[in-house]
Amino acid sequence: MPGFFIGRVKSLKYAVKGFFLLLTTENSIITQTAISLVFVGMGFYFKIDRVDWALQFLAMGLVLAIESLNTAVEKVCDFVHPDYHQKIGFIKDIASGAVTFAVLTAFLIGMLIYLPYFL
Ligand SMILES: Nc1ncnc2c1ncn2[C@@H]1O[C@H](COP(=O)(O)OP(=O)(O)OP(=O)(O)O)[C@@H](O)[C@H]1O
Image (cartoon, rainbow, N blue to C red):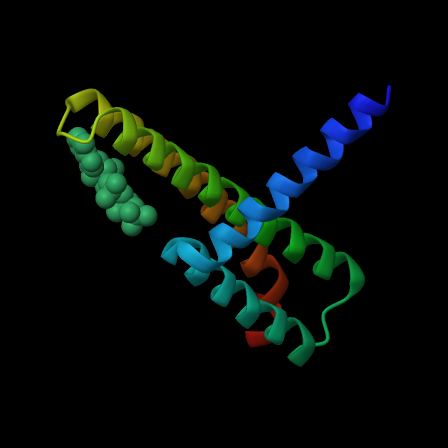
C-alpha cells in the first residue's frame, strides 16, 4: 500500500514538472497563457459573474490542455520520424485540428460572455 502512495506522489511530481516545462519552454503555451491572462483582465474589467468566470476558466483550461497534448504529439512525431512523411503530416494536422475544436469552443464562450457588453 505505501508503494501505491509513493507512486502517486511521484506521478504528481512529474506532472508538476511537465506543467512548468510547458509554461517555460513552449511558445504556443506561453502565447495561449498570455491570451488567457488578457481574458482574466477583461473578466475583472467587466465584472463578469461567477458562472461566466467558471465558463471562462473552463475554456482557458480546455485550450491549454489540448494545446499541451498537441505539443506532446508533435514531439513524439519529431522523435520517431524526424524526416518528412505523409503520415506524420496527417497525424500532426489532426492533432492541430483538436486544438481548433477547443479554440472554437473558447471563442463561442468568449462571445456569449462579452458580446452583450459591446451591444
Ligand atoms: N515530418 C513531417 N512530415 C510531414 N509533414 C510535416 C512534418 N512536420 C510537419 N509537417 C507539417 O507541418 C505542419 C506544422 O508542423 P510543426 O511540427 O511545425 O507544428 P506547428 O503547428 O508549427 O507547431 P509549433 O509551432 O508548436 O512547432 C504539420 O501540421 C504538418 O502538416
